Amino acid sequence: MIDEIVNCRSIRVLEQEEGPLGEFLNNADAAFDLLRKLKGITLDPSLKRSFHRYNGLGLYWRGSGEYGSLGGEFRLVQLLDAIVGGAPAWLQKDGWSEDELALHSGFRVFDSQFNGGVGTLAALRLQDGVDDPEVWYFNVTYGSVKLDIGYSDYMDFLLLTRGAYYWQYLFAEVPAEHYNFEAIGMELRRAIDFLEENFPENDYSELTVRLDDRLSRWGAD
Image 1: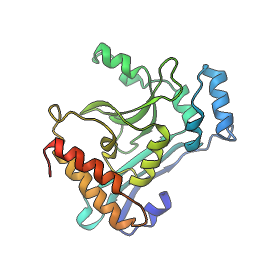
Image 2: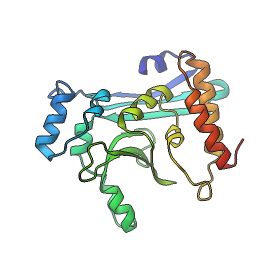
Image 3: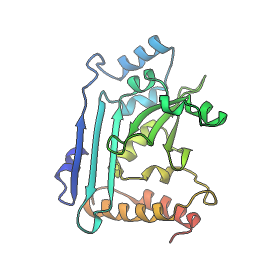
């Protein structure tokens, strides 16, 4: 995916990061076993499908020409480091409600924006007795939403969307009466058109269906 982005004539790569591999982890089995021994946490084996060893694999890109306002970004951390690292300290400070603090305490961040800084992230939500954690998306402007996909599917759709901004909202139930998402919806429409034009070998029909459904509720056409 990164090579495709870098080599695409319609995309400008503004920042790129390739952090070190977890050399002490030979494979997913070793990582999951170490996590169980260190933290007593057992994860569903299905999560192994999308296991990677990078600690800081990131890219920040913008479109060119008429798509210059479009962009995307991701910064991935491998699961063991994400979980052992704990919840982000800034989500545990005073100022959040009790419900928000309780929710944030389970967050283990595996994707964020290294150019945009803190404020947007995707996290597993650890809960006792749950071996296939929920995936939550946090935006400092709009708060937290639970995604209707798990970790492995998240990684698949990250590959498909190339990290285009706001793609996560295609997999969340966002109440239209509480948020003004018309602008985000239209930006997603342009992003999907851009991706279809530049990566025609991929199928974006599911994203289009999901976007049409949300636009009908967000008040945009």
